[in-house]
Image (cartoon, rainbow, N blue to C red; front, side):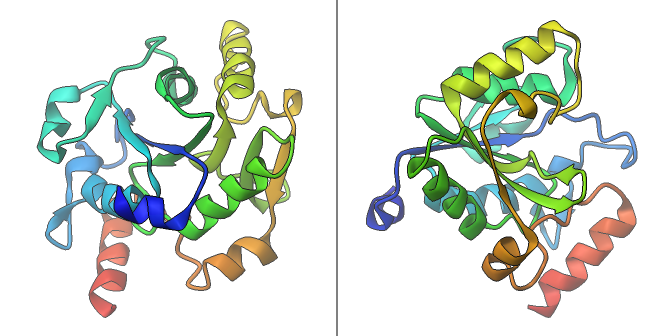
Length: 209
């Protein structure tokens, strides 16, 4: 964790969500090789330098033991992605929690660190990129653990499955286009891979750099 300490960030838990069914891919995409390396390993290697604590939320712990990192199952089972988000808040040890998807091979730590900074210097509960008029990136965002845990649990109790259904009940800082593109000039941070074509596109980008 030396790199983390050198950056003098507030303690941050980083959680990788890997509980999806990968229906469009036909197999567990987190384990598929992307330019010779499992997709989730690429994500993990990018976020580990900023993580004081790191773990994976999954419904198949055995498949991820090769990573040598902590893995947990959902605290509330069978609730989909919002259940994974709740688990991230429930299991994390730190006040600030970054949650990222396992299918973001170019996840951007500068954006996450900026989100952490914004939360640490305000009374906001969520720092989240907004990529469209009504579209957010909840799996590339930073959360204040206790407040968000309560709000997410309430949403689950009402059987609300959308990852952002509970945002109106907390204080939100939106990272707008100008800010996140300044931090991610390549524009690749939110490129997720859901299909074989997406994988090919990501491989071309990796191999070109």
